[in-house]
Length: 318
Image 1 (spheres, rainbow, N blue to C red):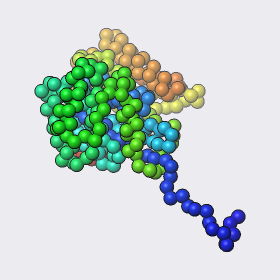
Image 2: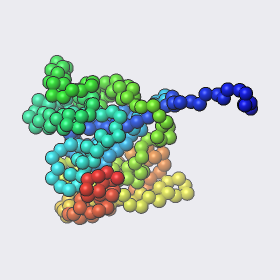
Image 3: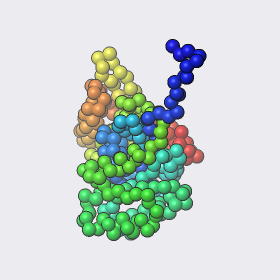
């Protein structure tokens, strides 16, 4: 008990905890999603060789010691052709708002090519206009000769004033720990925003649909174009701990539906088996996955698509 004559104990003025957000920005196919998964040491964001695979703003949480970092994987920055494209690009730029650290991720192995190099220069210029302090992450260094790395870093440093440059391979993990430590030091003091064991704020049913979409891209590759999506449906937990998951794969043409289904349904069965295996591994429960395929040439224009991706037609993220 504290008596009136005693001096009250001091009130803590700050928390030892630190928490904040780090945005991963860059052109399509730079490896941002693979980098996110490596940074948080878990399979969260989907990856594929197709450009513009990421359509959602994906938050991956990493907590170590007293620090919690929310890594934001964003849609690639590219020249939009559709309303949905424009909304995704706008949402990517809006990820800068409230970000305590920003990393521009580029594919180092293609920066000698005219197109990728020009796109990188354009993004650097746009970042300068926004007056954001940015770290440069040269990814996929495992695909290029070491002597070429330093001249590339020097050239890009002349194009934009980066506070730091990291050379990493998200695929192998080389250099990623240094980037993680750099971001950690830039998190401001404050209480954690999420429980220590939470991985993301992405709903399970939406994440599960993204896992299936990843399998569509990985297994069909060039057979089905980019204009395909997977919409989450029923998510029904059972008393035995298992869950029934129903999803709909939307394509734009009947011919693409036939490809996804495969002869006698063999392809969609393979897609379902691969997706179910990943879901069960990460959810630690049995998954009964049921897939259907529908044709809708205008699925990208449906309001439900906007809501699913956390976008509005004005391009503002919800």
